[in-house]
Length: 621
Image (cartoon, helix red, strand yellow):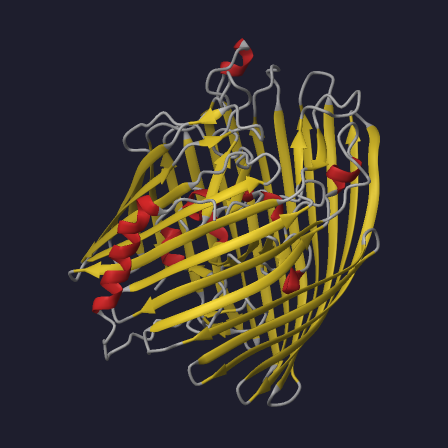
């Protein structure tokens, strides 16, 4: 094993020793949540064999005025980096994997771009989100291509009762930032419905920290307008029809030597879901959805580009309940169309389809839990792929649990990597991976702790390089660099201290390296983590987060170092009455000068200094 964890053994020992002191606890707290992403069926977090995190609405609300990437950065095993301030390109690295090796769903609809494979996290506002489920385990045997690193599923806000519910907020902060959102949920007879809108606007900061061109020293603003809506009809017990819609429009300015640079990103996702309880033990779900992604950028007075992606998805799933588990059978079809233009000239017009069959089983018997999955994908471009997963968990006391899991996964190259003008390579093979992991978990009345060890072997890893490319490839090219191995351990825990205090912490130690060169993958730290302290007393609610990361490298050759950093953020809220809440958040309180990504060895992407955001929030009770 290449990673060195000896410097972190004291922390590991502290977590385990605290857990050990509660080994004989008789009163075990029923901290039990139900998730659907890890197996495509409702499953208790106490019996899941994979590595799962749930982010609830309370945690989301504490980051009002922040971004989705700010929230994800606080989770175990996740690193984030951006190309400037608010609204600029945001990237997620889960357990050291690439951002295009991660499946992202919003209410079951795929949001990954067909051209880049990534997701515009910067354009999904927190105001629309009710809940997030994160699975840090291979997901291809359940969801198909791109699931090498895992999956993030975002659930938008929906009413939980038949009562009319109205909510909204107004906020303002540093860098001339303003936000507003409003929404409602209601019901009429057998129909539940709701909608919400959100707007955010800021003058921002210069996207580059130390630009060489004078025109790049200006502030680069950002605006986002988003909305979502839903309607659910229960036409008889156990039988329902649901409609959902999500739209997001974001426009951000950026720096590249021209004063008029900007990027517009437009995302849409809408779907229809039919659920039927065919018998007492047999449930069926049919979902048809369409996801659209359009990106238009202006890079100079004479150059612009337009990229349009459409993904049509059909899923028909059957779940059959047994005495000690659930069997799942599903058919998935994905159709992808991509068109690109450069200054009015068509540069790409491609499509591909994927058909897949899924067989899964989730079982629990006494202290034992199992999860099995098998998937066969047939891609019109790449042929057949078979992936599988197996997991086992054993609770040797009501509080202690040991799990182990294996999963295989794959990722088909994106349209850009295959066909982009003066960049792509149509002969690129797909990436394939095998992941092994094991965890030791403790869930007591107060303390929760988990240690997870993982080892992910990725073959045919695709990377963007700038040397050794064919003539005329001025922006680099996509190549297979061989095998990448990501080894690591994640330690996480939470524990109340006295009645009003709660401390949560996580630490990841990892080694994501290319076998041929022993280089670290670009922008990946070998150590990073978070410490979160919360305090509640009556109407007052305070929390602070310390986020830290070790040194990284900006480039695959590991020649451009990015220094380590530590950031301190804090939120203070006052509950005026049951419906009204005043909240203030301060980020980068110590005004650290840090870098998440660089343009070159001499020019860095900018990050925000100390900034504050104040909001007034209404939630009808």
